[in-house]
Image (tube, rainbow, N blue to C red; front, side, top):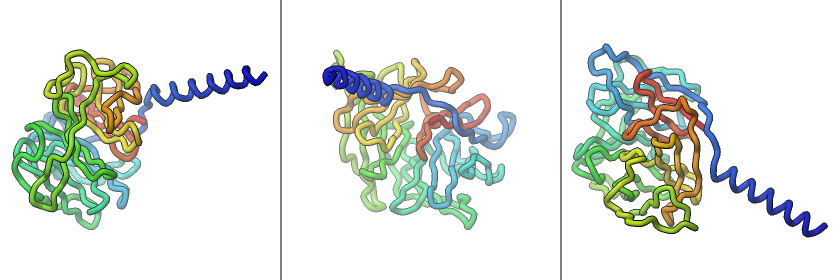
Length: 276
């Protein structure tokens, strides 16, 4: 009887682990961006989404031009900004810093990092530059903020590079983590792994920070329509999150995470779709 109970307990635990390691996400929310493709400076690709927990608002923007749209939404996904709001800079990543309570972003190439000044409704009124120059691995790098470690993270080839913000002078490359694409620790490193070379099956510009201990970094494997979470300390795969067949997946940009929600940008319909 004891052996039977022990076996049953082991099976339950194993089943629980499997569920934790692989599950299917469901769509939860949509953020409809302003303007149509017929408008001037309408934008095409999504720079990112971030959430301000203080005013409980989402901030989303296009990348590619200072005049491309930005939008502010309620926690329920209702847009409260008008069609005239723009990104004000050619940004890539956008994030909320709980220490400073500011919305920050990194720009294209050597534009640098900036933050938005909000009006009394929580709408961006202008921008301020923290620093300029190349404070990121490459021109198209999309920043994601790890509030626990206080690093801004960028995907560079097969590495996640962590930048430490040194006051308002510059960003210092503090650490890097090699990702072992699709491989668990028990499988070990793959053959011919190269830090400088990415994987053609994955979105090559974006990494997200999940805030899940032991599965901190997330990447989008668009070839298999799934999000994979990796361990910050080892770089090995920890969880696989399957996406619905209708989820929009892109090989670059158009991928974000905030407020516990995974975001993918639907280019054709100009909306961010949130999955959980």
